[in-house]
Length: 347
Image (cartoon, rainbow, N blue to C red; front, top):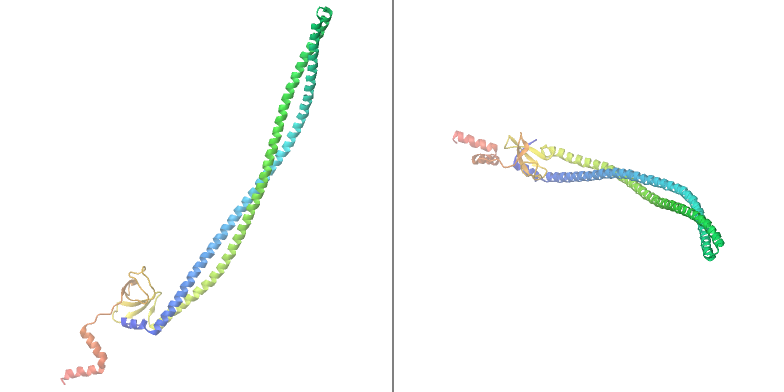
């Protein structure tokens, strides 16, 4: 690290060589920053693709389970519908038995009604014979005897008719209940069959959705692999850019006689042995105690370094010392010695 005054540092950074170096460093660092930014973007996209692939895979598996659930529900509904149909066949068989029984009771009821009607007609005829017999006691007694026997038959026929009618009504009601049960079973079976069809269709639709999700997951995985490959290339490019920036920073040590940091170049000041001059290579308004700008020259203390920065200023000089300094460089060292000797000898 060479000794330089502030004016020398200013002259240095205004020189064509330094400006060319600075332009090349700025371009290299800009390219490095762009490469890192692109790498970060690619890695973000890659992570997002991996996340989307995992999420799509999970959703596909869950959806596939849902499709299986629909198919299981369809199978259960089909089993219930089949059981109802089988049960309805048994109820239909029972219904047919009762239908035959009700039909038989219907025929018996019709015969009983006809027999009862005939007996009633006989009773009415015997009543008419009794009235027609008038004073003929023999005919009256004969007609009354017939009427008495017919009356007994009528009461018996009425009891039989009433019993058959009650049996018919009871069995007819049971037959209707059986038929209602058959129709209810058929309706339930038809409803279940419709639900079976719907569940199967829903299962197919959900399964197709699961297949789309699996394809989406695979697409995301492929994109993720492609992005990781691109990220590897971009990382290599960023490393090359960083290497070029580091190479230029190392070259600055030899070119400009300075100590090289990450963001500053340093020189020992000619006027101040307790500090150092540093040249900022960045712009920053937050990290340091003052706002710094690119190619700004600042003074720092050796112990604290860039923890405390202050703008570099020319060291103050006394008037007499300035005169002697100028005289030394204007007249030369030998001329000054001759003048001093003359003053001493008085010549």
